[in-house]
Image (cartoon, rainbow, N blue to C red):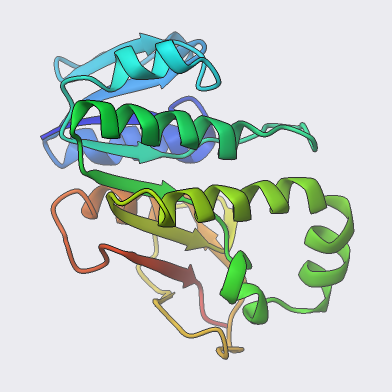
Length: 211
């Protein structure tokens, strides 16, 4: 399948591109400077553009079978790229008749807030990263209202290292036995799997390592 990744030069975006290529997909890496990937593959295409520019996104999405969003705000605490970039992607998908959307969000968004501990609720998302967190929630709301065949992926905080395959998936908001962390590589592999797996269409899937 032909898959475009928005936010392809971020940590999880790069890993998602790798996982998709490994799975045999044709991949388009969309970013402001996609050449930062420094990756060469016959099935990889670079698409330079700004997710906040409607025309850039509209042109880039055309001709693809599925879209993966791993947009991030970098060090900015006020960026709205997740919500507004995602809205541009949704509009482009609707315009071109593309149905499958996989969007990376964060554990804690919306009903998964109950999964978080005191530190994440009151220090990280409650204070330090509050604007970023609110943009995550707005992003999710836009995806849910899109009418597309969407899956939202809610990972815990990213950790480095190889994929372990040892994690909890699709747990309820009442679940407490969580580390609230997960290797980025595990998340990337899951994002890639959703291209052909319809099990979680129309659902938000939480993922975290166990304690």
